[in-house]
Length: 318
Image 1: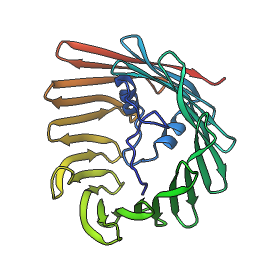
Image 2: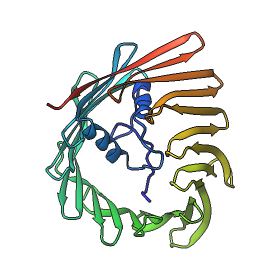
Image 3: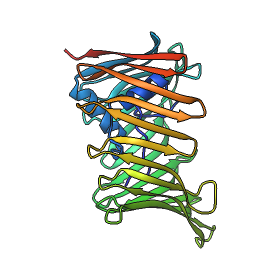
Image 4: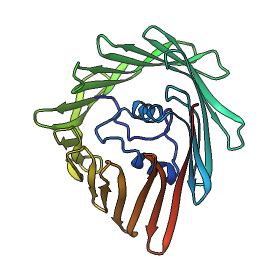
């Protein structure tokens, strides 16, 4: 189980705000809920359809764009959100590893970025324009161990965290350090027989003595690994049910139920989502999905008298 279970997004390097058009696009292309590798899922989608570029519109206004290489890596990304514009350019080596990520201002001028070098299991991060390393990752695949370190101003490495994972990915531990000592531990676990999983958090004092251990979150799954119940203790001292989810035999989500919102999904005979209904404090919102050549063409959102159309254009590799 990965250190983080990413919600699928089209941005492969950072998680800035997304336009609603892009958010709905990710729903339309239907990445299974139990597929947690967002980058691989996006790469698979664009390479299968030979896509070089995707442009997303809201009522004919361009709000997002993604450009890919032939391996499905995102080379250029633009998105507008909350009246701001985010732009990213990325580069990769022959082994499909990211070597450079550059963030730009709305007008296209360079803002800041990072470059990465690789040496066996070592990945080192530099800030663009600076020769002093910032971070190092050591991935020991045979031992299922990943070590994250930060560099000090004197170029000394300090361990930030270490992740241990078992072979079937059903259990992992993350140890976090300060001043070379463990102060926090996360235990991520999943029992496929019981179809239950969760996260425990352990706090240590400066001498390494355990202070407390508590459940942070938990979940139950169906036979495909989809999370059908989610529990959290973030706002309380004990785990409480925060959402339930239903899936069909084709591994497609049918319902998301939250304390203040209910979402329902309908599909056509080809397995494509054709309707999403949201019932919340804003009333009933309905999104209807339309396709052309198996790709999302437009999505029409209605809430009372309000209507918004999201549309999509593609360019393909020749």
